[in-house]
Image (cartoon, rainbow, N blue to C red):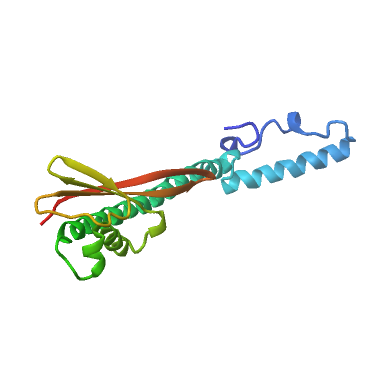
Length: 193
C-alpha cells in the first residue's frame, strides 16, 4: 500500500508530511487536514487506490500493437488474394496460348497468340489493374527459345512446343505511417497441344 491510502488501518496515514500548505495559519491548516482526511477516507471506503490508472496505461500500450497486428493481417490477406488472382490469370493465359495453335477464332489467337494469352489473362484478373501487370512469355521449340512481352506476332506454334507465361504485379503496403511495396510474381508452363 502507498502512504496515502493505507486502507487496512482504516485511517489515511502521513497526511501532515504531504500537505503543501505547512506555512498557512493554524486554523486554515486544520481545515485543510480535515478535508484531506475525509477525502481519503471516502476513497478508501470506495476501494480506490493510486493504482487504478494502471489498466488505462496498459490499454494505451497494447492498443497500438494490436492495431498494427490487425492491420498487418489485413494487408497480408489482400496481398495473398492478389497473388491467388494473378496465379489464376497466368494459368489461364498459358492455357490459352497452348491451345492457340491452329485457331482462327478469335482472329487474334491465330495472328498473335501472345497478345491473345495476355488478353485472356487480363480478363481473368478483373480485380487487378491490368495496366500494372507486366508479362513475359517464353516460347521454346526444340532447342530454340525466344522471349516476348505482350506480343509475338507471326510466331508459328508447333505441337509439343513449351510456352511459359510469367507475370509481375506491384503491391503497395501502408502500415502505421510506413510505406512499403512488394512485387508478386507468378509463372505457368504449358505444353502446346
